[in-house]
Length: 458
Image (cartoon, rainbow, N blue to C red; front, side):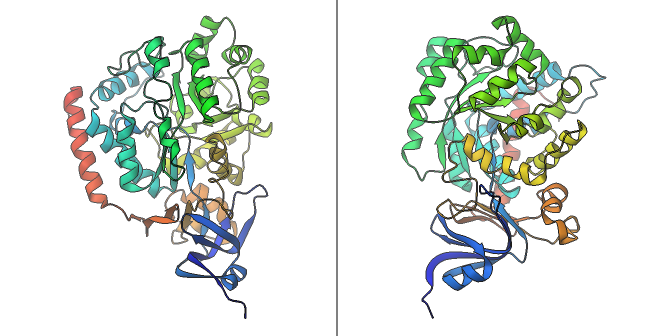
């Protein structure tokens, strides 16, 4: 009998969705892990015959897939989004009312509140199967996000904070969001030192805020900085009709056409929202190879689907790298994103399969992060960022269509075990690094401080 190869952990009896190039699946599979890395994935009997581990996890037939990669989330605003009041807008644009609520609460955030918000965010995302998140440069102090990552173990990509040099239709009243071209260009790349450690779970990219708050000069300087550093260049763009028309007026043409003409677009571009794309903007998107972050709940919340047709299903069919981002937890959480995107496509007589949506939330996100060689799929040589689900909810039955049931119906309710770098961060649905009660207590104290500073009652 051949001697077995040693590894640290075996995940067995698993229905594995690898999200590799062939979308390989093993209905009775196993994964061998050594240290941070996956060393083998395949049929359970074959892996068990070859590898011997000090520890094993019996998935009991549950679905196993790569950790979700959320490509757009304002960590600093996590509690803000949850704290805004409810209101009937009477068919009017909710933007001004939401902006007032947001601005007052955001201006009430100091370092400890930002850390508490990021900590609560980490708890929320990990228990929903999200292992990595990209912040769009809206943290006041990125180190507060890094502290939360260190405490709970999730991955985060941060950026230089609040790079903007013009006053657009949003965010001009945020106290700590200073506007200035010289300072913004000088501030580019200050967080990139974090990428020197290839094993760090806190990395950095380049962001400008976008949506009318930056000049061509700043955008091009930021893109050049990202090109030199070989990192993503990220910005908000064309979230709503108002935003897109603002850009139409200042550019004299549609924004994506303008960006193509000035040489801004490229494969490392990660543009967020992009709900409003006109016909002449589609080819620049496709030809450039950029990634788009679709925020389905954001689109639905602001009523964008009522005024424009969702462009993402057709762009997906044309090969555009579409990934998923929650934006802020106003009316949804991380576990809802695949479900909401599925329904939003159906609502406009389009179709995206649950498997393709899973790819958007895993390997497509890794491509946009420019980390698809190490993250986003379950393959030998990649980091062991893994979600193990259980079948102990009625939504997961009957088991003949596990992918649909688990991703669309059960959402995050079946997430049982979550690993990052081979480390178990959630076990039996509970955090392993930190007491969840302590996270809630920290968040509650911070929320009281924020409401008092913002002058909100209750």
